[in-house]
Length: 161
Image: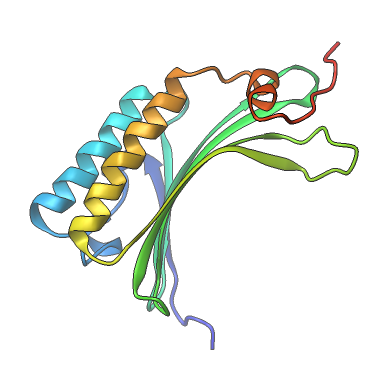
């Protein structure tokens, strides 16, 4: 059965995301901690600060993505996704750094770094979001060069003219 109602939105900065509505299990100080960690991510970003969100009857998610296009069709992507899974009753927080695939068999993208947390309650969500935000800020300060990132994890790169 498909959700009858889906609410969507987007805005510039974490403050545009209706965190309390999307994560009703996160309240009070824990909600403030998530918002503060989101602000720290926004302060470290150099892109458009776009955040998107959506919610249905029994699920919700919000995310942001930093996309950088490099010479020769190469690209760097840093993504953060926070979503609920009503079947498990958990909230999942996933952050990844992806680069374009240059393997003989085209996989399109490869994760070169990933952080993943499954949280059962509001306090755990706040703790995991803060840890993930710290990791994202570290990634934002690190190189965004896809060739260097692929080399770190042993993936092939092509020569860029």
